[in-house]
Image (cartoon, rainbow, N blue to C red; front, side, top):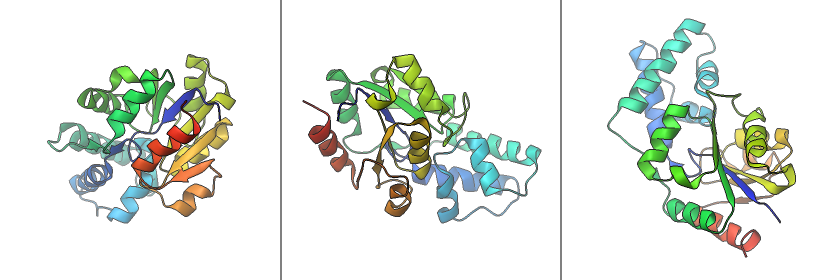
Length: 218
């Protein structure tokens, strides 16, 4: 395999943020006097843009109500004292891939403000050559994020690998005509990931590093 551009999802792939996202979703519903969705339901929308996620969680809500829900989620996520951590080894992996001359990018369902906050808190901002967020282009599984990143960095579809933990990542890659590597330690289970025919699937973060070492790095 001769990929030169690796595009990472953020939440559930590089950062262990599921619990925080679910808690903020549930708090947003409670703020509006609505029954919060259970964890199993709330976690299903991780990876989507906020508007798409809230539409899925509250299909009977009005446009105005869902906008209020998005605002309350942002209030809790960006204003709370809790923080999420990178998966152990994620920082070292990104630093190593960057030093080896690979192009690195992020395609995420986070907002630009949310991603910038995460990049600042982890110190990884300077290691990515391009980033795209759901509030500045189409949300996954639309291919636009990947297409924009490839265009910006001058990478062909055949040179690009999408790495993510949800079927939205896998479907986005498929829609963009690029290969995908599934990670099954995040939000979606193995069966859902394999449905979209990734080139392979790893089950722990340590396996991700090993896979990249075996298949991509000299």
